[in-house]
Amino acid sequence: MHLSFTSIVGLLSCLVHSVIAIEVDFTNHDSIKSAASTVAYGLVKYYTGNNTGDVAGNLPDPYYWWECGAMFGTLVDYWAFTGDESYNAITKQALVHQSGTDGDFMPDNQTKSEGNDDQGFWALAAMTAAENNFTNPDSSVPGWLAMAQAVYNEYVERWNEARDTCGGGMRWQIFTFNNGYNYKNSVSNGCFFNIASRLARYTGNETYADWATKIFEWEMGVGFINDDYNVLDGAGNQGTANCTGINAAQFTYNAGLFMHGAAHMYNHTNGDAAWKTRVDGLVKSASTVFFENSILWEPACEKTDSGCNTDQQAFKGHLARWMALTTIIAPFTADTITPLLKLTATAAAQQCSGQSAAKFQGPAGTACGFSWLKQGSFDGITGVGEQMSALQAIMGTLADVAPAPYTSDNGGTSQGNANAGASDSSKISQPKKITTGDRAGAGILTALVLGGLMYGLYFVMTEKD
Image: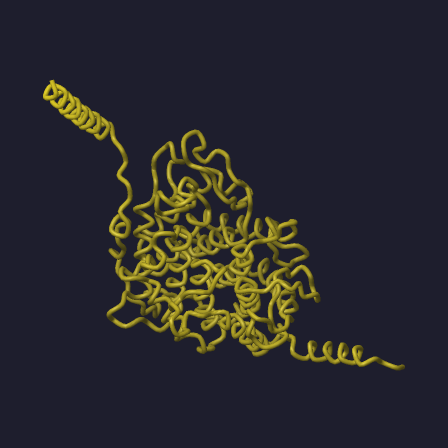
């Protein structure tokens, strides 16, 4: 058979591609760790925060700040699952720098635009560091536990009990001048719930547990978590809206936040029946809604004409990681979750076969695509979210040998501060609400000013006469 030069090049290209694509044996822990290492390397190559002149903890455009926190939380768990310390230094640097002067993840470079969910993903990373006995910061800096407590305390202050604004819950945005302030959503309240439940387990303090219960029951009460334990996105909270017109979109990371948090409450309460029911419901819902042929996907956008945006492309890996962690602290879930994670990880690894490009600087043939449903066919959609999600899916299959999260009673060393946190008004002064007294005062002042003007005008006119 005669082959043209072009055909020979094409065949060689296919052979090289098959050699350098990620191969993993999911029955062998060393093979899984090796594959996770390759994907993690490709992920960190997107990071520019340790470059001269850049800001520690930041990713380049088009990635928002929350995704930076999500990445470093993932890297802490990557170290805990695999023992690979390669990225611990940049992770510690990023967490400390972005925690800001008050240790609450409201740094000067982000505060004006950050929302409760943005702050939450950094606090989740700090809590992960505390639970894994990640290298503690210097004594001059708040500990990982104190950072999570600081955000928790600020969340408590932002809880809004007013009847005409859904009778509870946190808003999406922190400050009135940002779009989304009049929207209450599951991701912001899910961050609050997840942090509170993990603080309860870590510290044993029942105040955290009480708040976790309050948040979860509020979510159910307004219908953000429905009778089938589907976690819905959120709703407007002003005027007649009052969380009645719910946006029913379901996203993987929302389900993961509540599942993982509920598992901590189940563990903290020594298997309380109510929390077991909730964990069961959330696992059943997630395994039904977010898995097609046992492979994890993002149904709200993955098959739509417009596809998933940059943020949404980073969601599903968090569900994979939190499901893996759920099996550790609520072992009764493993029979359902583990088979799903293994098939998902296999599909995710098959998507990690893209070549190096301008933005992907990892090993050739290891860029991870987005849609794991397209088994054996690289979809060409790459980025931080795709690489991070694949890493979380692959390393999640090590849950059976991963350490259980520490607590303060069984070896946890992170320093806490139950009174950490700062008032939002100390960050950015917001416009004061106008009261009836203010209106009356303004009316009197206006009358005086007008009176003075009229008198002045009269005086000038009479002088001319």
